[in-house]
Length: 343
Image (cartoon, rainbow, N blue to C red; front, side, top):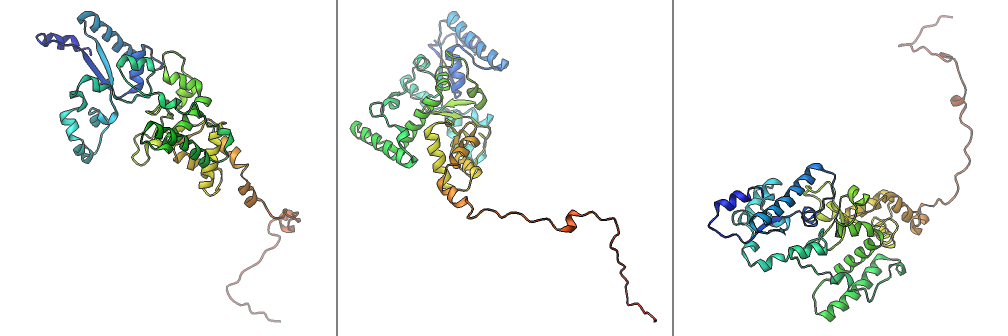
């Protein structure tokens, strides 16, 4: 962006209607559009402020607006070199590297079909993004009360039936079970993490909660709060394990999820249950305490772990273990052969 005045001078004969800056970082894009930087990193804050100042200067000096656009990481050819990839993967994506983005050659009206998770409604209007928020309120008229269910399978089954009915009315072919899972998770997060959710939807309007900073929280394309871990470069684990869904420690849905994975782990105890939950793509603050509260009330575990009779009273310790003796009280000599004795 700093080179734009020189590029404009070189292309003086070519009219420039607008400049588009495309990035795959939703958080950075939200900071730029909100004119508000919520980070303690001085270097990042200075760079973002410089981008905002250059954008305003280009608009005032040349009467040209700089538009910021989002693209997914898979459509960003710059990541192929910065992140690194094998020669096999590079051959598969060689056309994108050599020819560039396909959608950028289309009409400008088709550029806005990008799913954004970390950007508020006001910011999306500024970049012309269209995101459908109606899915969050589809079950508002027929809200499912989570506290009435004692099993996660029954809860998901009933909620999926509601979505199946809605999809049938709207003539849509969407998996109702996936919709039910997303709806239940978002309902739980809205009740347990209201401050964090408000900040992630509009970073410029509120101060950053501690949980957002400590767990590096972000919103995915479905609007679900996830925690960005430190194993993002791992090729073994899936996206869900690398960026687990945040669960409320004391919420009823979290209790049902713990019960479900405790049963799947064959009632093997706290550590195994906690490992199953994390491998399923969930993250619970103070997880050991939450899992312990659920496992301790499991009737099957109480039944099998209970002893049939009380331990008998212990007897006295043997005399050699409790009496003191002087060194060499009992000695012996070991001869290598028999001894002749003459009487």
